[in-house]
Image 1: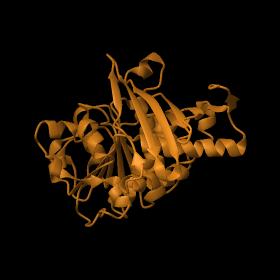
Image 2: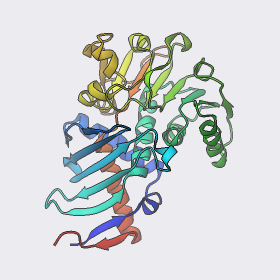
Image 3: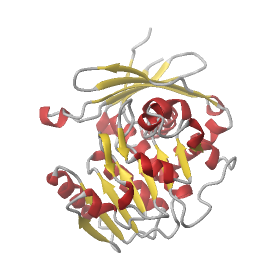
Image 4: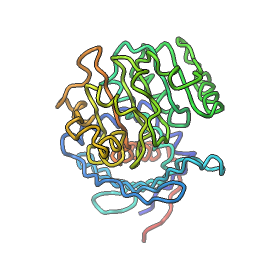
Length: 330
C-alpha cells in the first residue's frame, strides 16, 4: 500500500512524445464515445496568475487523476517556471493514491501531443511552412509534436516579443539535429505568419495578435495560449472566416478557449463551433475536407490528457523501478 513518488527529473525520462501523442489521440476518442468523466476546471485567480484543479476518470481503462497547475506569466522574472503542476494518480476501484508525480513536464508534452493530433486531422498533408508565435516551453512541445505527424515541413518561422526566447527556441531546434528545413527568426508576427500553412500560437495574450489580413486560405491554427477567461490570440475575423472551429471540450472552450471573448461579445455564436477534436478522431465528424478551408483548433488543456499520459509514466516507472515508494495513506 505504498504510493510511488516521481519527481520531475524522473518523469521527463519516462514518457516520449510518440507515447504521448498515441495516448492523447486515444483518449480524445474515448471522450467522444462517452467513456470519460471530466468536470470543468476549477479556477482560483490571483493578482499575478491563476491556479487550476483538474480531475478526470477514464472508464474504459480505469485511469483516474487529479492535477493542480498554475499559470503565472511573470514567473520567469522571479526565477520560477510560468507553469508548474502536480498530479495524483488514483486507483478508481479503491481511491488509493497510486502515485504522486511532477506534472509540469506532463502538462507540456500532453499539450504538444494534442496539437499534433489536431494537425494530423486538420492541417494540409503537404504543409511546408510552420509559424510559431510565442517561443516558450510550449512552443518547443508543439514543434516536437508537429514534426511527428507532418513530415513535409520545410521552413520554421518564429516570433516572440522577447528576442532571447526566439533565439533559444531556434537553438533548441538546432540541438535536435533535424535536417531538411530552414529556420527563420521573424521580425514581427505579420512576417512570421505570411503565407504560412500552419500557425501555432502559444502566448498569454489578452488581445488579438494575429490579424486576418495577414493569413492565407488553407491555413491551420493551433491556438494554445488562450486557456483562461479573457485570453485571445486571433483576430475574431479569422474565426468568422474559418470553415471549421474545433475545440478540445465545448464547455471548457466557451469559458476559457480562443472562442471565449468573441462569443461573449457576440461576434460569433455557439453554432460557429464545428465540434470537438475527439469527434473527428472517432470518425463521428470529418476533419479537413478541402485544400483551401481555414481550420482552427482551440486547446484549453484537458484533464483526460493528463490522466492518460500520467498513467503511461506510472507504468513505465513500475517497469523500470523508478521513483520512491512512500507510505502516504495508512
